[in-house]
Each structure stands twice: as C-alpha cells, then as structure tokens.
Image (cartoon, rainbow, N blue to C red; front, side, top):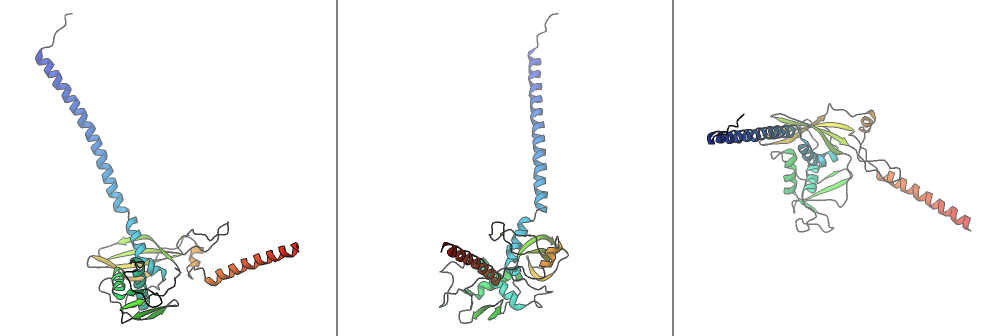
Amino acid sequence: MAYKRQTKEEKERMRRRRRRQLLGGVLCLLIVFGAASVVASVGRVIGSLFDDSEERAQYEKLLAPLVMLDPVPFDSLETADQNLLLQAAIWEAIYNEDIADETKYERDESGALIMPAVDVDKNGALLFGPDYTLEHHSFEADGMQFVYDEERSGYIIPITGTTSAYTPKVVRIKTSVKEKRVTVGYVAPPTGFSLDGTLSTEQGDPAFYYDYIFTRQGDGYYLTAITTSDTKPANSASSSAAQAPAVIEEADNQAQLQEQADSIAAAQAETSSEAA
C-alpha cells in the first residue's frame, strides 16, 4: 500500500488542530482552578459572616471594667447605680489610657495619679454613648475612696489594687437594626490549689450569664440595660457559685499562710528538741 504524503495545507490544518486542542486543555484547567478558587473565596466570605470571634473579643475588653464590679441588672441608665456607672467609666479610663506615662498625668503629693474628668468622660462614652452625662463628684465604692479634685478637674486614684470578682466571656451576640444583645458569661477567678500546692490559674465555666443590651445611637451601639439571661450554667455547681462573688478573701489567704507557718514552726521545734 503506497504511503500518501500530506500536503502543505493538510500539515497546516493538523498544526492548527493541535494548537486548538492544547488551548482547550489549558482553558479547561483554568476553568477548574478558577471554580475551585471561587468556591474557596465564597467559603471564606460565608465563614467570616458567621465568625464573630473578633467582635466578641472587643466586647470582652470593653465590658471587663464593668463586669469586674458585678453590677446589679438595670432597665435603663437612669435607674442604674450612678456611682457604679461612674466607677466603671473611671476604670475604663485606667484600663485604656497610658497611665504609666509620667508626663501624661499629674500626681498629688502622695504620688496618687490624678485622672482628668475629660478622660473619664471619653472612656465612659465608649460604654454609655456620647449623650449620657456623668456627674463628677467624690464617692466611696467597695471600700475605696474616689476623691474628685474640683480645682484640678480630676479624680485622685487610690494607690491600691482591686480584686475582680468576675471576668467576662461573651458567648453570643444577637444584632438587629435597633439593638445588640450581648450574652456575657461571668467567669470567676481560680480559687483552688493544684496538686503541687501552687495556686491554680485555670479558669472554669461561667457561673452565670447576663444579657447586656446595647441600643443603636447614631452610628454606634451603646449600653442601656442589663438583664438576666436565658442562658444557664452548664451545671448546678456553677449556678450555686453565682449566689456570691467567687473571690479569694485576703483573710482566708492569711489564715492559710498562718497555718502553714505554724506547721513549719512546729516541725522546726520538734527537730530542735530531738537534736538536743
């Protein structure tokens, strides 16, 4: 059988066909990779819509000074304990401002920091909104004196610490056009000792929950009420812990330390008598 030689035109058609096949294969691969990329992008977008972990972290930071004070629920800012709201604004300022900067804040003769009322107002507005007015005055709370110096227009912050009864854990945020309902778990500080005798730093589950109601004002949402939440503790032990702040009292610590010291002293005395 005689071999039929291809003509120049047939060879050209063959080359064009191969180029089209190669181009088609490349396009198919691009379409597949493009579709996969689109699906992955859509997945990331959908995931970001349901992932509010960043917003929950922001509310935990914002509410930490107020949750620390363990406020009683209230229906409006007007019915709330005004000294407690003022104290929360002061602690917001202490937490958010750079109080370690010696050049930023004035100090009194004893070295106590003087927090300007304007900074208290600024940080209070983060919680309660720009329309709420704090009335500045001296007051006492939790055994601490907050003295308002009218001449300096600032609060003399006591040179002492405060023990937080609870820290916030935001578990849910429900957002509507008019409000945000932020469900906050109250986590008590560690109170037990580990097996090696050191104080445990492991935090447990929330002892109880409150809903913090943030109402829309202008472009933002601001706290207007606190109410008992429908969310309940995981177990009854946590629920019973909600009846009183789970704080390690200094007297209990002193008693434990004294007991340990007495035990050591007794052991040393016994050793000395045996040696004699």
